Length: 397
Ligand SMILES: [Zn+2]
Image (tube, rainbow, N blue to C red; front, side, top):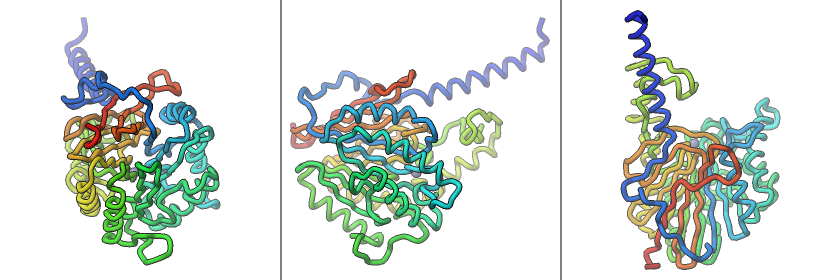
């Protein structure tokens, strides 16, 4: 017979294990809003798309081996024709971008970016890398130099023209015409958040140099292209159900150390809540609750709300999310090499913490088919679709 003390202890262990495994399983599951539950039955266009855009973010943590999401993306890019664009949505090199050649970290940083650059060998389409907060020297004083260094490295390595946008540390908007009817606009949201040296005096390269001119210039290019289909690419999302949006789990409150060390289940009730609560209600500069970030959201959404059928794609949180708001579509695609918690609901149509990327197929009637591709359990270069949605153009009906 087991002693009652031992039986009690066993009960607690089993209960704790059940809670943890439920939390773990929860994190692994895709979530769909009520209206999206039957996404698999959505009718797909019969004809072939005229243009395809691939969106992947936060892929800069790999070292020697290729992350699973990059393998799947490579499989897709090899088969794509030249009517395609792939966008890397920032945090292309963790943890502090590309250091200069004298740094001990330089070799590791080069390996992290080369893994991404090498999957583009057989790709015939256009390539754009957008900067993120980590690329700006971990948002520290030497950020501007780091961003210029990364731009120059990527463009030399690929030798495929202007593949890093915006140029030379400018905030953008940097406009790329993809077809007569489709335009991609890159903006650097870390420029907005950056507290240190950045481009802020008039020069020959940047069309905007301060908050006002940046927002005005963005509005101007959106207005000039309003008869076309527009996709804006940046690193920071303006709506997110991830950590940067203050969405933490019970696990984050009870076992705060697991955020950094996956298996360190050291319970710290109350004390553990200080970190997630402070990020939820005050935020650091990289969180949507921070006043400077909030101002960016207000300004960008104010401008976007004037335009039809605009897609805004970002990374930053390490998961896949889609939100439909009025006539605009908001995508978070930041699970290019790792994943972190994402909450259900809060106006989202779909959320999933799994490695993958978003694929947008543009059709001649101006409809867009959004597909979220994720890795298979047995890692391969094919993956599978976890969500699909037809974004109908207001004039196509
Ligand atoms: Zn980031």
